[in-house]
Length: 199
Image 1: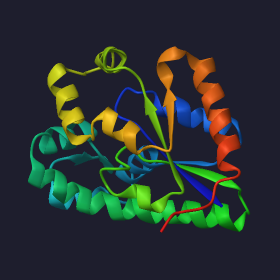
Image 2 (image 1 turned 180 degrees about the vertical axis):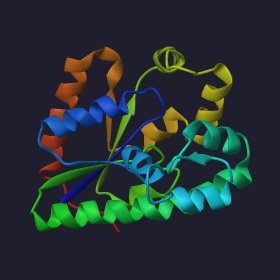
Image 3 (image 1 turned 60 degrees about the horizontal axis):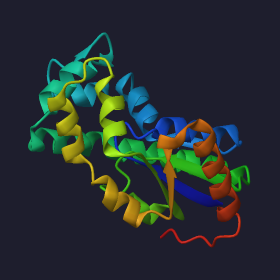
Image 4 (image 1 turned 45 degrees about the horizontal axis):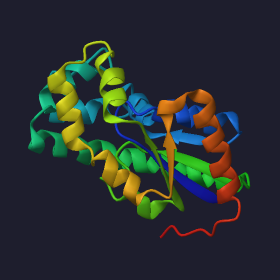
């Protein structure tokens, strides 16, 4: 089974690209979606214990939790120590199931792939990218987004040019959906003959 790691900075079009892989019949494990599910269930007691007042009605209040950890490196580390191991557990279940089903290719959609050393768990890295001005304009259109929040998100992420440098493949989303879709098809053809390299 060949494991593709899909990553990209905020506003680059990673979720749309993940859907394109899924449209090719490739199973995708979206770590952001996994976090959302955990925030609606399993992790609520641990997060409430670590950050009192950030949960309500059996769910994590993402706005309150976000406000609590934004700009506080120690709080963010504490949160990551709770969340990351559970996300990795879910990823392991996903990979085991895909392996049992003799799936040829899977995608792990991991926003902070390089930042967390995730490139060692995959066979090839696909970075989704776009020019900085396109990225900024997309992100600033999101509800509740401010320039300060955008800068805080960027500060946590490896610069795009460094991600591109370390990628096996780059999907440029600035030239329309059809262009991106063609790139995804080319990547799937290329990985069919590539050796596995994950550790």
